[in-house]
Image (cartoon, rainbow over all chains, first blue to last red):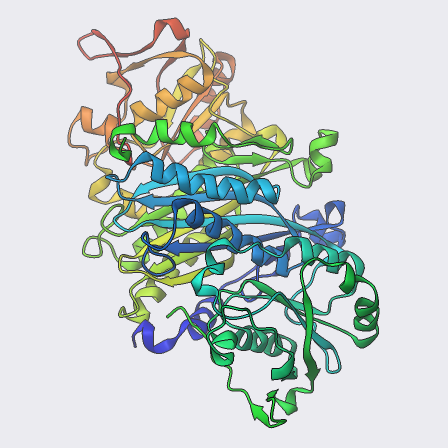
Length: 313
Length: 313
């Protein structure tokens, strides 16, 4: 069988199923980041040092797959490479701390090209207080950047994909669609918004929307063993959205999708919502798993959603 | 200016010079791995939790630069990708703990190709007790693997490149040369040897030899502000070495080079040396910086060494 026939999700399941993990790994493959109780005595005593978990993620950008040199400046490439990782850390409720960067590019390129990429990386790191502590450079015909990021989150603030419960309300930050036109290169990872949320409310589940609202929502539902009903009329479309369909499936929005139990949601709607600069919108509610995942259209039709979205293979 | 004209070392200096680090970063760019006092209170109190530092490194392998698909099996590619990172952790005196893996490959490849790479990765992880906790997959014309590895080391056991002092003796594990024929694809990272060393002796400096004995020795000397005299007659060549020159400059040996003060070295020679399965050889001594870096040939000539070796650009 070929990779293009198996799909990314099945391939990751195939790989992760064979991996053995020790007791310090709270979450391995399958959430936005790994969650680790390090140093070890933290795992044994159940009290991570300083009450914090270590978060850990990585992401690779490849020329002509994730960006083109004609369509993105070196600064934008560097910014995006770091911001994608920060978006994953945000989805766990945490902050970024330490990055290592592998960069491959053609040795015939100008030094100013690499300078520009690093300026983008440094700008994102300065804004979100991340330390660049290591790196690796190689020759490569196509430009490749792979960044690994360590973050941290207070144990009480950790949010995963698996805590959504029937009755919870579903919210999103920002708006969706048309990201490929511009936003995917200059988006602000939702660290600030995530921190406001986890510091003030009990968030039952969270994910960052990278592969489309529908696919990422279905990831939360699978992890939480739940269903959902979302409402077309409520989903905020960006000015650049091509169509409702595009906005729900094309991805690269880098917004947060999260759920809260009704009492928390009411408190949130009364208090924090008005104080956040970034719009947050209620788009639906979590249901029982047996009810599946449905979209209520503007015509009040209930459409069963087949979770499809952009997959990397 | 083009990348091929500036060279990897100058490029890294150019980038790392602009990077700001917070107080928790004990070592950033410039050693085999970063060294971090995390969680933070560890940095403030000077007492890392559990008496350990976090080590952090990354490494990227690119098809047709670091390996060819005709010259390496998928298993070997995966093994090498993980083992290179472990070799860096060994050079700090530590052990590997948590890896995240970015893999890019052509979607027309067989699933068994990716399975094979992961078997190599898992084999190295099983042998050295590393948890694979996350990953990322992308389409890519050329196969690219980037692995980031978190390790740990007891604070008292940390070894850097910068502790070599005039009078220290210089040792290496294993033998040098001809690695490109086979060893670079199936080498065993010297974690066990490094742990035996740091647990039993005061090692003043250490590095893993990836870019050739001469270049990596000169990195230790620069970091330690010292000189050295090494002896041609003492340097252990592998059976596959092409020539003495090749053995000292071609790299990919993945052996340890380390230094010890004379009393420790005497104790080492008397006790541990005979108990180690891996050969360890005395090759020379650290001198004052003003004496430079010299090679004493078999003809008793003293040759000033111009630090040259394999550079990635």
